[in-house]
Length: 239
Ligand SMILES: NC(=O)c1ccc[n+]([C@@H]2O[C@H](COP(=O)([O-])OP(=O)(O)OC[C@H]3O[C@@H](n4cnc5c(N)ncnc54)[C@H](OP(=O)(O)O)[C@@H]3O)[C@@H](O)[C@H]2O)c1
Image (cartoon, rainbow, N blue to C red; front, side, top):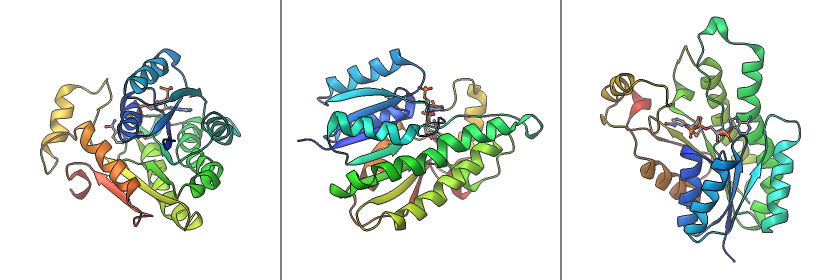
């Protein structure tokens, strides 16, 4: 029987790339999505074409109890879990003056809070398979991004969660994080702004999706690494 991966936010962009990477590395894949069933169906079709057994699971991870119910549904369908990738995350750009309490709640409930409850619910099944958790952070976690304060702070919390879960779930489950730099910029970010950001990055390039995904899978597969956050960012975190 093939190992099983649950990937959150897997219907599009990077979440879908993590899901396809997991399928290429031999996993069956549970595709979590929230709002776009058509995109989830496309992702499922792509994974089937890669030879994976797969199914889409809708869930708004802000809802009380939703992370636990998602894991239960995946275990009912697949019977095992080997890898949990928590990629879902709201993208919020607002000046400080406009940020609301609801914005903070959204960002934190989908990021670190759902990450915690997904990991807790998945822990026993992952432990049974010497499995792994990968939480998706952002270089923002270690920066000051004044137009993205809740996002940056929630990613710092995600990185703290990596360290805490790595100890809480040891020795049965390894927990790591990945902090992408510029991979797929937001659709509404002007090309000139992307160029400006890339020109200030040491390697002077955006990160190809395949570099991010291969690093994520390598990190998750290594049986001696836990509690680490790997920046895959063309050097952005160090400037
Ligand atoms: N793109 C980059 O270059 C980049 C750089 C650094 C870090 N990252 C991180 O990488 C991850 C993926 O990035 P991305 O650019 O692919 O993200 P994205 O396009 O903004 O997609 C966000 C995902 O989060 C899901 N989501 C949002 N709110 C949710 C909720 N309340 N409940 C459940 N799911 C929810 C969305 O689901 P629906 O679409 O179904 O609503 C979507 O799949 C994120 O953690 C992001 O912070 C990305």
